[in-house]
Image 1: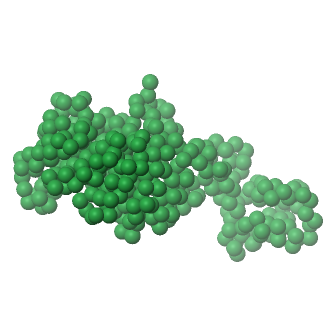
Image 2 (image 1 turned 90 degrees about the vertical axis):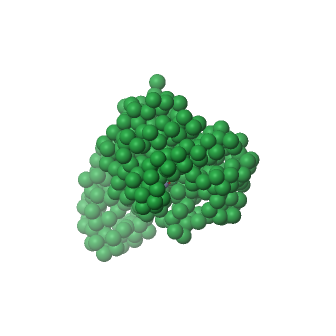
Image 3 (image 1 turned 60 degrees about the horizontal axis):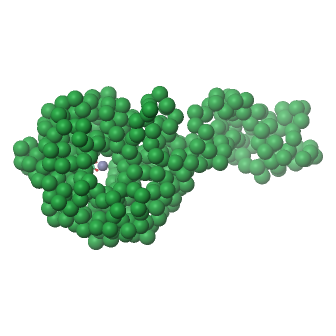
Length: 387
Ligand code: KIV
Ligand code: ZN
């Protein structure tokens, strides 16, 4: 029996911190409903104390989604926590996400404080949040760079104070996968009450390791992944939801499962990209426009013989209709023949060589050859179209 991994989506909170990507309440409701359809377990809807609009959005999302937990962020400050609780008052499953820095860099430079004082502020915050909601998640900010012994003390104290979920963020995206995994493992083995809470991974992508770190985290005992659609987020972004969901689905050997309906991934990726006015890079794993496009001759030939030669994911599994064969100057005869057949032109073997050399000249000039180009190519070279 594989282990359930909970998906905590923070597109509307950490993801929305991207400059220029702010959404209004109506847009946030649209995304929240799509996330619910996708099958996420928790939606982090916002940071209510940060602005009246964010408060309103958390409240509106709480009223509009019913089958997932709705979470609101707060600092370890009473007025933040009270504001989060108020914004969540209509949520069927409310969660407050409160916490404080755990690394010495944060403790000394951001808070100008000491480990002892910060730990006790964190504990007080959990206790205060517990007065409003049962489900309280505690984040130990910058845990990636925190001293593991102190982190373990902080986690133990937060669980004792009533935290139901403990978030171990690699806030700056600094950790290496084996190192982050070891950190989670250290907590699993050294925090005596760890079995009373769910451990969450929350990894940023500054070194391009957020997904690898998240997977390493669940392999070492964590059971919640915090992530965003398209991996959006401040700086280099957050862990990408679609990458984690597809790693877990593709690697049965990991022995995990999620509740994500992966066939909805492409749709929600486009929705978020459109509403946030943030294009997805073409080579982005799973959701980039080239993720299922084959353009070089050797790959195309192999793919056309058997798609498994160059594809490990069935595009339909993520809601993409089909793979595509792109025609460029790097394409081969097999691809050219295939694309002609796709538009109903049956190229005879002796025509193919001739057309291929003309095609290469055109492709070098134009970079990308379209269906219309193919028709012109066919007509120009004096061969009657045999449909
Ligand atoms: O990256 C981080 O540490 C965070 C916390 C506020 C959870 O986003
Ligand atoms: Zn974050």
